Image 1: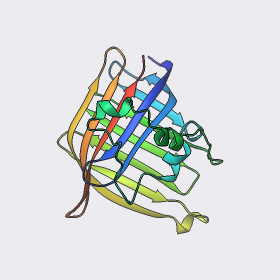
Image 2: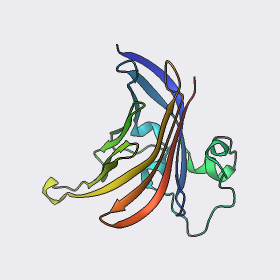
Image 3: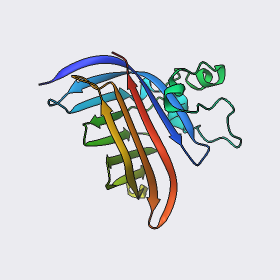
Length: 187
């Protein structure tokens, strides 16, 4: 059962204990794979330039940072929209989420310098892999971290409407922060 729908999505990534914060608004393709399994795809050209360059780290905290995830979608601050300009990256790549009520896999596969894959399942230590691509490929480096998913919730029927993942990122025995990934899909 393959169903393709084009949707506007709002993807936010927030660190609860670090000054990392980004919101992306883009058009995505939603494919239904099974009754409760979906793929959400975006090409790199559809992502704002700031999301690709990882310009989410600030030396000082933002005063307009939302208090809750639901407030983040309603932000109209000009600086936020300035970071979301539709400048495109000349390198091709795909960003996709494999969604189900039980687990989520997020992948960025790129010809550019960075690719990554995250696996989240509630109550489980999942893998977060980052690959720094180089030319020639023999010089590429990869980094594997663990994440612990404290909360995973996918809402909506028959199509997903909202996803929220709360997780911790770990390197061996050192915690690298707590994060919230939130996705809203317009109907």
